[in-house]
Image 1 (cartoon, helix red, strand yellow):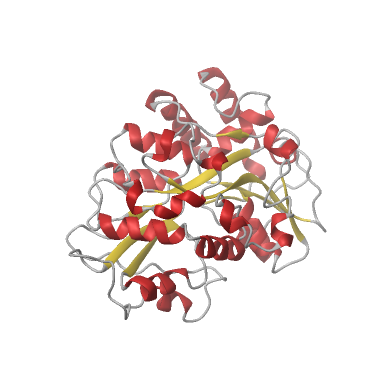
Image 2: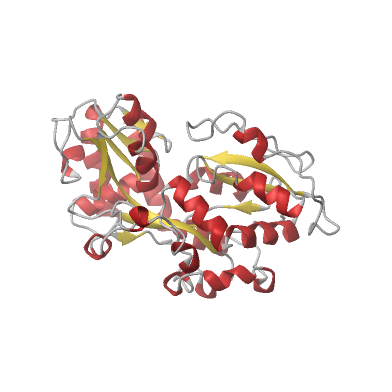
Length: 358
């Protein structure tokens, strides 16, 4: 990871979709120096793995003359921990909904200048005024979706989170995400809110996971889809888009949101406090919101796009795929994770630590 005094190193884009020279090209020096102003002609981006278009970064540099230095994180917890002691040099980060609010409360985000993001006019009205960031003062929407279960159809037929938490049928063939979302889905399975503030309920969820742990093969840092694709597991709790990417490579793979519901999420683009190149950061965010760019990214990574104009440019088969754009009944039985205050959030983190250490 980078330090303030030195440039951020190029990230190793290790996933199968970033082939050959694509990663190198994506961070290559641009040839058209425009729009960067008096700042360095660079923007330092901290994003999730496999979460950008095949040529997005390369195209951005060609269009603006601004080089992209690109780093990866595996979870919101990792992102938050990295920046809570001070920004090591990032200009644009991609936190999820509840972490946006958490970072706002902690004073970790810069207010956005909407005049420098004219493409925000393309945002779907449903995403224009979220509870976690009223008026979009600190964040712009990037992608949205669900957390559910990816599975190998020839080996598994899950219908409930209980197939993971209370069944031995798939013992040793299951992976879970390595973050507090596992506490939340355990709460859903137990009939509680995924945003419970009850220490007793959170503890009950942790105990459920601890009992299930002998049957869990891995707690994966956002790599469950790779375990599924390689045949190491038959069930993987994962982000829907990650499973959809591997479904393209293996027709035996599928995805569902269990009957109890799952987690709805929205990933965003923010500028962290102390960003060395805030003008370039605004330029980058506005570029992503360009309908053609946003549509291209969504089509490539197979996540739902919150850009109403871009949606018209996305292939019909994607728009009509319920694993990408879930039907209303799935949305209604799922919950959006919210920030619950540091005291309650620490209960979730302590519960996760107990599960991993058990």
